[in-house]
Image (cartoon, rainbow, N blue to C red; front, side, top):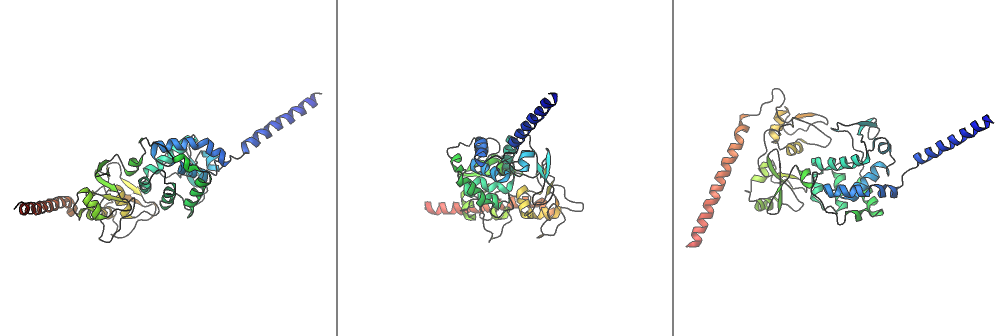
Length: 349
């Protein structure tokens, strides 16, 4: 009798464990994923301006509807790697074996960090010049900015959005303007001049270019002299303006702001991109790192942004360059005022 009871208990325990295992192993469906996280995506849209459709589609694609190893073991729903991450980590095979990925306490933390990741990286700045309802533009922009290595990444996102009508989530959402908004991605709170948003980094004012911008148009709009825009951004006569491009409207500096001592070069980054990113004169950046002008840095190379490598000295000419630029500007303004005065005088006669 005792043996029979013991045998029965063993069967019951096995059945219970089997039931629990089957429930644990059950995969989340796409619709279940959408229903679970759509409100979180909308909340992040309100906070940062990132379309809820894009956030949710990325979560679906990167996490396999929440079923990937990174999602299950690390709550990482967006495939974000460690980079400068100081939190918990997990190793996972991706483009290379045993790569480092961020590990979160909850899915909420993953969604929140995804927003912070996009709003804190300069390479995604152009996305925030788009309308929050332009999911196709956002998808294309993410691909161009290198969020994923797949050439068809944008197509996959658009397909998910349209098949599941996620674009409906973007409609009627009021962006709150909390930290992490479009202004944060551009580098800080901005003012508006002639309808143009003005941002600031390294104590230098700049704008984000639109696709229809021209040098003459921007100069006229902001009351700048014709030569200033190109000179401040070290551009040539034939350089085209790209949408989302940073354009400084004041001279760049000889070093990055306090706290920004070095920069680790990522794939695709050029010396010019880095000089614009930190508001440092390109020639000075080359000299600080003992690099020949016109060469490009290697991936993972550490660039000095403030002190410079041993033996690297910023020429005296740069110490007086800003003073000379100010004098030139005064001269130009004086000449311009004289011309205006002469014109007015003749008109009165």
